[in-house]
Length: 102
Figure 1 (cartoon, one colour):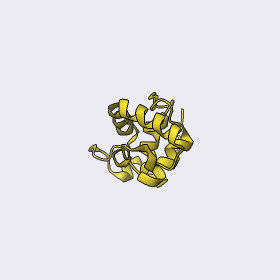
Figure 2 (cartoon, one colour):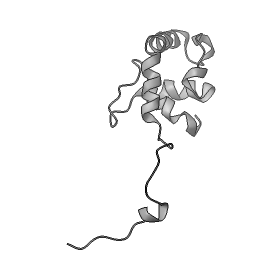
Figure 3 (spheres, one colour):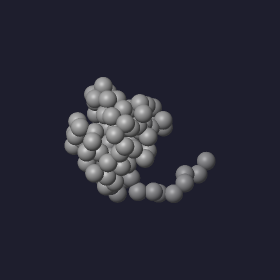
Figure 4 (cartoon, one colour):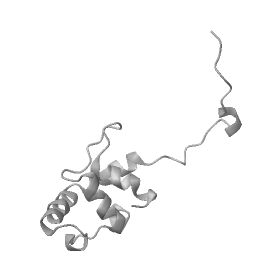
């Protein structure tokens, strides 16, 4: 699975630290297998026979993904690091300056 797929992976399996549940039935192994082939949620075909999983398992996962597509896209958005937020500080302003005395 490529690094750019990590937000998609988190959207499918969930992230308890950030408080979103993922899509029911999707675990780390299934998400890794599918995203290794298709990279992003939008690229996953509707026909689960192309996924590289057993047909019964893939059918259940496809049904859950179809039912919760909007939530999965929201979870992926929550997993993304924002790069479009303007900062008042310069990079040098954020450099470690040591511990402050009491």
